[in-house]
Amino acid sequence: MSDTRQIPAVSLRGGAQMPMVGFGTWPMRGHQAHAAVTAALAAGYRHVDTATMYGNEVAVGRALRDSGLDRGEVFITTKVRPTDAGRARSVLRTSLRALDTGFVDLWLVHWPPPQPRQCRMIWNEVLQVQADGLARSVGVSNHSLAQIDDLAAHSGHTPAVNQVRWSPMRHDARTLAGHRERGVVLEGYSPLKYTDLGHPVLAVIASAHGVTSAQVVLRWHLEHEITVIPKSVDPARIAANLDLFGFSLSPREVAEIDGLAAA
Image 1 (cartoon, one colour):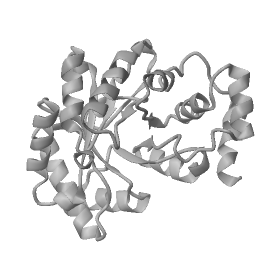
Image 2: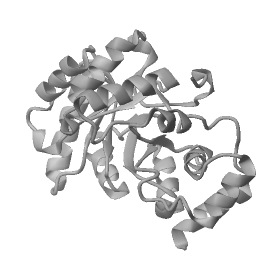
Image 3: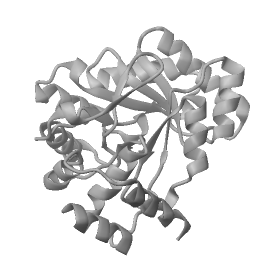
Image 4: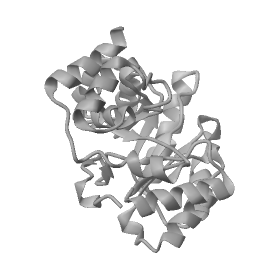
């Protein structure tokens, strides 16, 4: 089990402290989701990411309950579909019942609707529910910087987080800087799925530190202060994906990995 004190956290608008390594749960369901989340919590994860669309909130909630951990020890993220505009409050209440909790730490709009007006409508609903205390912090997923700017301009509230697909091959320094300029935390999903873990750059760095290429990629996210949510159903890999604090990457190594996006 990893020492949870080693996991850095980032402060979000709304007051939540988000651990910078979380456990992703898509597309797990049922017993598989319960077993994977149980293994993740046992390994030391204290941040679990789910969504209404995943259909696994009941299993996630049961794993959290069975873990015996205090609710305040685990950061829970879920997401609302933009197609649920007009009934977001009831959707979150359903999620809360499934997760067996009175609130979530982070609630995200899962993806942007096609029209700016629709984006603004669901965002305003999310803000209203946050004001009721059902979500400590709120944000978006799969949104562009232009879409974030539009939400902020029309509501006066900038999303705390934007959860996007991120990996060395998708690294974009300008996008990362743009989020920082706006005070939006960038959270990366699918960090390993779209990465060539056999790439020589990763292999050489991994060998130098006595770790795996996957661990190098996840540590690279942390060096950039990007929250990352790897996923696996294999207990050994679940544990390995959190074992990131016995080494660090040099600026040169980070730059080499950054360069994979242009390769």
